[in-house]
Length: 147
Image (cartoon, rainbow, N blue to C red; front, side):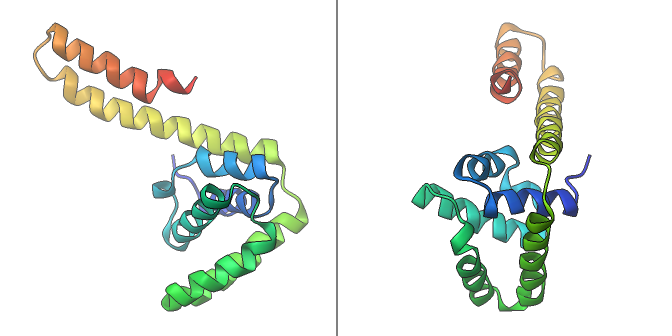
């Protein structure tokens, strides 16, 4: 299951223009490593701002994009296009429930992928209490703690 470009852009629009609660939720729903290319750079910058200032971004979005363009001049065209796309998505109206549901589904799928990959390695080990404990601990860390 991929976290598509449209979904990435819509979630970034909530981070950029949503209220403080929606911005924080959107940042935390899908980790930065799940974003592609320039979207990852934007997510990282948005996350840094929110974690540092504990407030919504909206009036500072142009400043953040200016900083990103200065730091990544080879990505200027992609950054400008993304800024326009975020603005367009937001102005056209986004269904928060839909966007967040898609992100939650993707995040849950990723957690299961991570758990299954690790669990496969653990269950290949000899069956003993220590390995069973490792399996249970990994389940609690990856899956159970998120429900």
